[in-house]
Length: 315
Image (tube, rainbow, N blue to C red; front, side, top):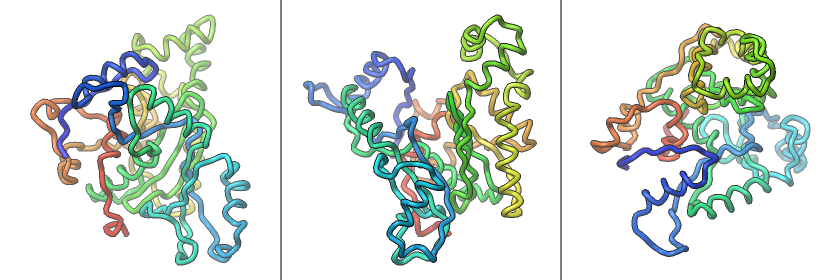
């Protein structure tokens, strides 16, 4: 696969996206000329949760629903769900498996329909619709294996209202946690630190690129950090392994300081991915124009959709 061009645009501006899609269209056509695409989505209802199952209950037909209701806390009939092996992402088969580590992954049925309709309205035909979170985690596992990094890595998806926290190693997903605190929880701290009159003014400043928050990073992430330290501490006591790196996969460049603040407070370095070396080893190269573009972790989700993983190669 050869990457010819990389383009990004504002997510909530349909006109800008439509213009970008027109440039990518291989040829002009009528209204039915959709751009056939592999799409990674980050739905608000997305679910990627690690669970340790009990092999003694595999023959119980009610067991999965019991785990979903009492541990994962979702209603199974309202979700499009998959149950996967945590180590290699293959389908979890109760009839032949004695494995215990699993991943519940999915999106609400309602949001699947909404996403598909939205993509079609924008001229995109989703040949494959993937959970961006799951694809990105698979890519990071592959990169850790490629780079021979043996220490676990903390992966964070910080949304407006929540944070998805994952611990991955070169052999798979080790731990997951949904933290009900995201970027919006930092707004009151911004208001207090800068001395603004109201939260709306703090919000506008926080999401703009007009102020350097690096110096107050520790104060802004204090609540999130407490939750992360609790989760990491539990994992380290349980496994005897220490977190070696951290990476934030969805932050826009103007909020990049957040990743460094989390890295500093946790006392571990950021996972710096050598994209071109890694991707070329996986058969993905860049032409002369694309090779000049600077790559950062905002592109991880996109590249993860291009990778083909060799399950047999994963222990």
